[in-house]
Length: 159
Image 1: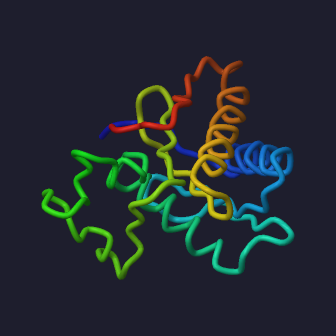
Image 2: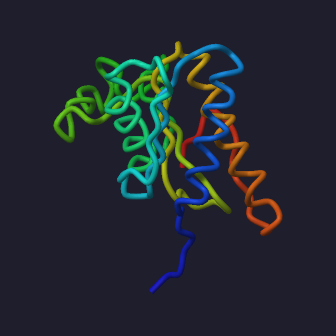
């Protein structure tokens, strides 16, 4: 049996707060979803004015990032994105009843080298989703630093 880190509500709330603060600062209404390592939501928040489709999209992105341990945009980044036509995972976006997201806005949550969950964002353009996602990861890093835990804060994560 292997002991491991487990993402909890305290950490998820800190990430949501960090991401939504950045969204407010840049003027975009976001939905933010934080999932555990199995892709199930711990926290989901839709800012006032955010699209009604945002919760499902944000969850799909977080689900994909956590479950596949990679940032969602890496699936379709040329030339070797595995979900691009002709590449090995073309069509993967239809997996899991269409819940597999292969576009920008989903990031694995990596603590001390282990993927403990995912953060998904919906509401902005790609740059805005990345900025808000990185703000959420930075908030987690700041929360966990006093405990001696390191959080990976970068957009192109592949584990």
